[in-house]
Length: 459
Image (cartoon, rainbow, N blue to C red; front, side, top):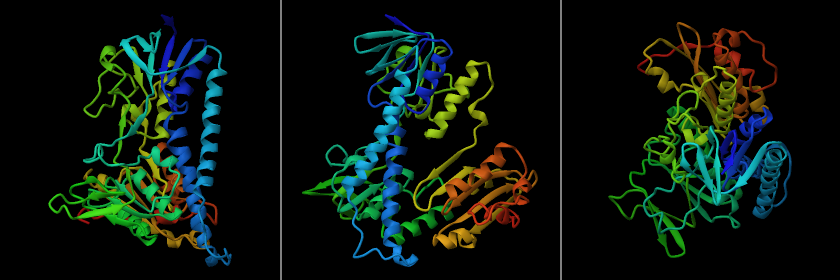
């Protein structure tokens, strides 16, 4: 048996930072990875997808060149092989960097293999038996493929589509959430026909309807077909083609295509860890149950990142690391202090912080609404990108910002001023009276907030 002061399982966003932090404090640490060092973000998430989104935007801008007085010749052709080569270079640089960080840290041992609990303090990795009084789970999540017909029909996931070598003639995206819509726009800009199938009444079902409808209109303008209210989804093999049934009461109501991308959510990688041997409880979906300090039902085990169901974002995983590291120093940081914040990296992006308008309405308190179209932003006009709007919901009594959404160019960056004000627990007047730099996207925020109006609860 190999004895360590701590074992970290998984090398995603939180794992390496925690392992090196613990090793740097003089503890002996083993960090275990069964596949690629760097986890989802580095290998099949943020880095590769945003690299390909950047290539798709380059094609989009090139096609619009004439609008800006730039002649681009006889048309634009996307070389998918070059797109993938660029993406892979970025991935490998990050993966290698994290690997070198871990292997170059004294008292930190990187072990490759599948970890499985044999007791609350013992983990087996192949022929090796590791033990430690503190074990940290950072095992991430994977695409869910729980769709009827998936076992008999070829499909792609958000991971496998990153290595597709031929451009789909017609890509059917099952799922109108963040992952599905990023890939839908990406491959449409690469040149594929794209159809998005969503079982709910509108795309991004957790967002306000005005955001969803505005984004849908944008995607449809680019030629993406959208089928919402798909009451029954089933995949089928149709010779050399594939199809998606969208209404079980009418089996002929099918969408035919060349490829299917399943983007129907993610499930945690917790089903094969032997968590029962560690007395670690999970919920019905498999997410590890933790308290606000990321402690599990076992006094020896913590859970960070996607597997705890408390965010499923790279930035929340990093914050999980910060919370655990702070608590090890007898600090008080917890997930209770975290404000919901995320972005959908379509073009333009959708960025959101705090509550949605729909959520705020359930509070039953007087609300103020501030909303302005991106067409009023000089910088957006100059860039020729005036799609979208920004809005904020404010508690009328306390004048605290409850939530905000920016759907528009640069919104994923501009929204941080609103988020910072929320973290500072300052009233909205701090921003409404501020002087922002011109010409920027952010400069519309004070103007927007100066025009707050009461939000009728019946609207």
